Image 1 (cartoon, helix red, strand yellow):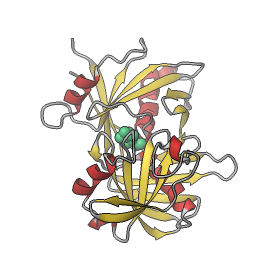
Image 2 (spheres, rainbow, N blue to C red):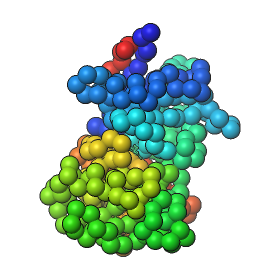
Image 3 (cartoon, rainbow, N blue to C red):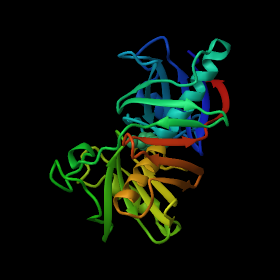
Image 4 (cartoon, helix red, strand yellow):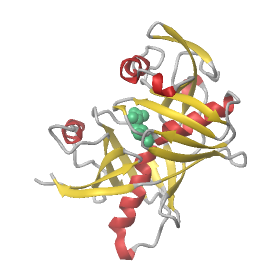
Amino acid sequence: MAIEFTKYHGLGNDFILIDNRSSLTPVLTPEKAVQWCDRHFGIGADGVIFALPGQNGTDYTMRIFNSDGSEPEMCGNGIRCLAVFLTELEGINRTKDKYSIHTLAGVIVPQLTDDGQVRVDMGEPRLLAEEIPTTLASSQVQVINHPLEVAGKTWDVTCVSMGNPHCITFVEDVAAVNLESIGPQFENHPVFPKKTNTEFIEVVNRNYLKMRVWERGAGITLACGTGACASLVAGVLNDKCDRTAMIELPGGLLEIEWSEIDNRIYMTGPAERVFTGKY
Ligand SMILES: N[C@@H](CCC[C@H](N)C(=O)O)C(=O)O
């Protein structure tokens, strides 16, 4: 049976979106998602996102499979794409431009803005070692600027969970990082029992960071929304940046704010439809 899909991207982090509003079970298995994401033998994407019915009073549920078939808790660029997808699905009967979305990381709230971007309330960052999770420190302790041996080198890392795990390290020159070789060694390091996403950050100034990412389950991507949020938090915790900053990714710019008022992270960025099809 052919399944309809729409391809979206958020700063080049690209996803296949599926209208799954009639059931809480995704219409694709993780194995099928791997085939669909294959850039040579499939449609090609960093992941597949399902728009499912809401749960516990939310408007919708988001589930996502990474391109390797694993299921992450959250996806920042993906939830912006989902918000635009839902708006297009609801069409002229649309009554909302703000959605409450049930995810494995809790309830996330994206809102379409007047200039065509999406602003997302990403919730509060989680900082305790057991919340990441990592064994780098004892469970109730934060991991800030902590040494970690990877690929024969000691990196100073800060760990932040945005519902999904992130390991952030600050470098002099982000372009010089050999992501392809170092990324998988962070991802699969035994101190991260659920593996990790890894962000390499160059500080340009207190309101502008450059980032490259190796994503758990997807490898090198052009952008990572949760990673940009986690990196801003790591920058604040290490006194390298202010609580609002632009994050430059290979695919473009995200604005991230860590609110002093409610401790929540707000991410603003674009989401673009690329094409629709049946597969
Ligand atoms: N690209 C995403 C993150 C997707 C999930 C990630 N690969 C994981 O396994 O945690 C984003 O924009 O946040």
